[in-house]
Amino acid sequence: MQRQHPLIASDGSNRRFTYLRLSVTEACNFRCNYCLPEGYCPSTTDAPLSLSEIETLVQAFALCGTRKVRITGGEPTLRKDLAQIIQICKQTPGIEKVALTSNGYRLARQLPDYVNAGLDQLNLSADSLRPESFRLITGHDKLQQVLDALQLANRLGMRNTKLNTVLLKGYNLDQLEDFFNLVRHEPITLRFIELMNTGDNTAYYRAHHVAGQSIMDALKAEGWVQKVRGQDAGPAAEFTHPDYAGNVGFILPYSKNFCASCNRLRMSSHGKLHPCLFGDEGIDLRPLLKKQNPPAVAEAIHAGLQFKPAGHRLAEGLTGHTRHLAMLGG
Image (tube, rainbow, N blue to C red; front, side, top):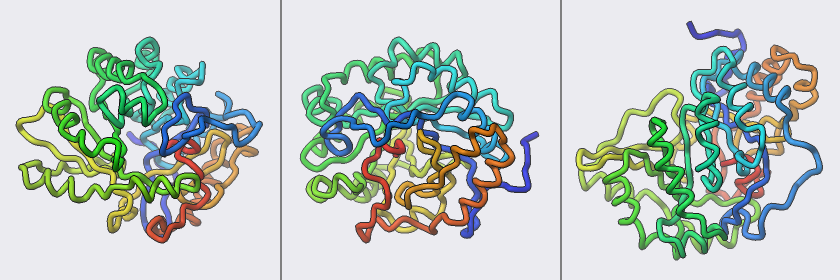
């Protein structure tokens, strides 16, 4: 039976939060031109959350009704103790699913250990399936490593593996057929993501942003049918087609009512609760985490949710405290 707690995570808009996106590092080994074009530069000298702090944190979120934890970065595989983090999350009573978002660079040799630790689901990233375009976007010639990780996830029996692709004018809009051909044969979910404006990428955003609605409408016209969204699923609208082994999803943060179904909260790698990706600086929970008192942390999470806005204000050009997506893993 699922655990209940009087402080079940909800906000003033009657949204319930069962999904935690937990950043375990800001560091990233890619230099994606829409996120970290100059490479990773530390924002603080503070160490990321320790294993004991993560254990207390996840226990607190479980008390608040969290059922799914997605581990993000930066690039989470840069942490040598990632398998232990996965195990901590998976063994926490109330947590039903542990997922990982990774650029896939290092996964070919690491993924079996993560699966053995309890990893349930994997999201990878490839903004192009052409090596040269991939290198131009990410700063690395590592496309094959990502595709190898995708195949390994399938061989290990992982279900519902996702491949994230940021739509970029001038880089990959002429390559959509490549992605659809992949999904025709691979049982994965390809997700097109609209480029989001952050504090550090405004000029890039204006030059390369693509509205994904027209692509989604074209899919519908070709017989793709929208799937029912799971209770612990993210914000993607996902579609299926009988002629394709995989699915196609869309994350369109500028669409109307995008935030109405929000079910997720974010923790930074330094212990700050971010009720909204594009909100203010965050609520520092680290002093409470050091005391190893999950109920007290759960109280603070509940109090912090009362400051969660009804929606972001990206359409107004307000990006909040988020300078780049590596800060919180998107």
